[in-house]
Amino acid sequence: MQVKANGIDIEVETFGDKTNPTIIFVMGFGAQLINWPQEMMDALVERGFHVVRFDNRDVGLSQKFPELGQPSAPDVMAKMLAGETPDVPYTLTDMAADVVGVLDALDIATAHIVGGSMGGMIVQIAAAEWPERFTSMTSIFSTTGNPEVPPATDEAMAALLSRPADDERETVIAHQVGVRAVIGSPGFPTPDEEARAKSAENFDRSYYPEGTTRQYAAIIADGDRRDRIKTIASPVLVLHGTDDPLVRVEGGRDTAATIPGARLVEITGWGHDMPTQLLPRLVEEIAGFIASVEGRAQAAE
Image 1 (cartoon, rainbow, N blue to C red):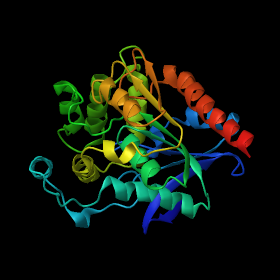
Image 2: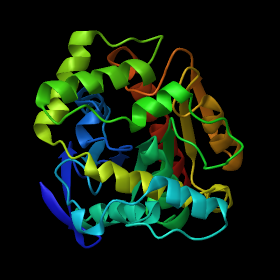
Image 3: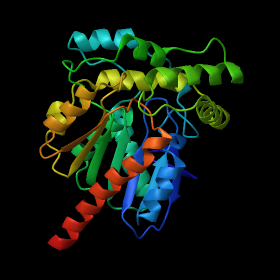
Image 4: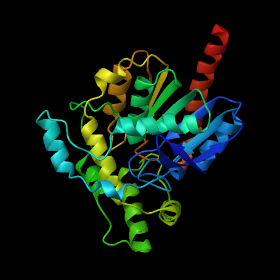
């Protein structure tokens, strides 16, 4: 369904009983809401949660912003390095405000927030800027913007920023399968047939590569978040794979070290994807963490 959130149109899906504690999921760079696997959503509903996932602005079925143009990532980076404030179409803080807007549209006062990759950056900002709205935060394969954290491998960054040779369906699907092979989990490999099916589902639902340029500019322009996120007082879980070539495990370690009391869980063999084999473990980690937060809150009442 479409809702008006933060003044724009956002595509939202909800699952489970709204009277249960809500978990809202925020996806990463260029990724649609369906990249939060349905199996994960269903398993969390079975655990007694109300679950929300949505398309970020400029991706999937949410509002697109072609009128804002295509920023130059090198220019944005150059201004950041020069200590200047770059002019970008929108910021990660704008995207965090979108999350709050989704909660407002759904008439949800507070929620547990979970974000992956760029979504992890967004939820860090949301938890810091709107502490009254978020009961806990889970940051998945994300980082703080600390320039001293090791960067992505050259191969992973090249794969992330590459474009298919043309926009034909088969070309795009093959390209996305190739990207997944580079950044995915060596310990939990996705069979080619499954990878192709997921890429086809994404293409058929929405293919809009123009939005990724604006999202990438927002990531670069956000810079180092450590001073902002060290103020987060809510319980925090950080999940990261030791074999992530795109956002290195040191990014998760830095996130956990920056936020007081954050708990870090490292998973050997996990890369930068959501492999089917790992979903039960991720559900256990997220559900167990949030249930403990809920239990402490009830005990304090």
